[in-house]
Image 1: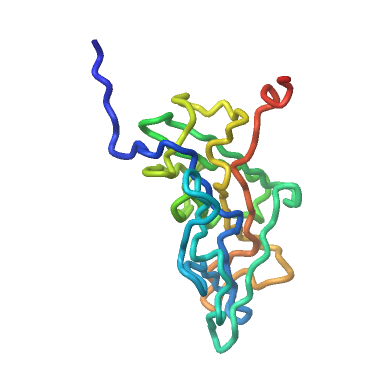
Image 2 (image 1 turned 120 degrees about the vertical axis):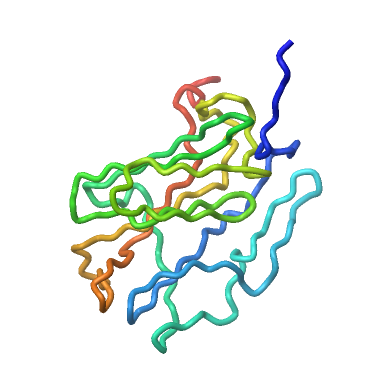
Length: 215
């Protein structure tokens, strides 16, 4: 008899976690172009909408009472770019991997226009967020390991079948992209360092056409 082994990252959740639809907030300084991520707002994190399957309301879901400042000016919240509004020459995709014991999500990209460069990728999860930098010479994809409630999955498939259960509904990738030809915002700081021109929003809500066609 083969002994069943459980990894330290395997979730103990017996229900599907839920998270509010609010996006992670990102702010840009209108003077120097620096980008900051909002972590907390005017209220603490909480749960709502039932006891068995509560909805998590993270602190960033609540408006900040006062916007932080930089270079003497209030930061401006950045608009998010949806996939269907992406300029030509850049594509993104994702996969859910690892099953029960090694659950992870992977973000991949393909760039055919040298004007674009990926700077960082953030992931909204059920319990918070992760952020990784795409350093020079780093190739696609970028892998985000999951644990606790974030590692919840309906089945043990190593590669998600993207069924109607949508285990990661609520997860969102945010990709910081440098556009060297952006005429709207500064593309580099006073030292020549590249700045984030746009943030691409990639929700993990895709369902396979196979499941969509089933009665």
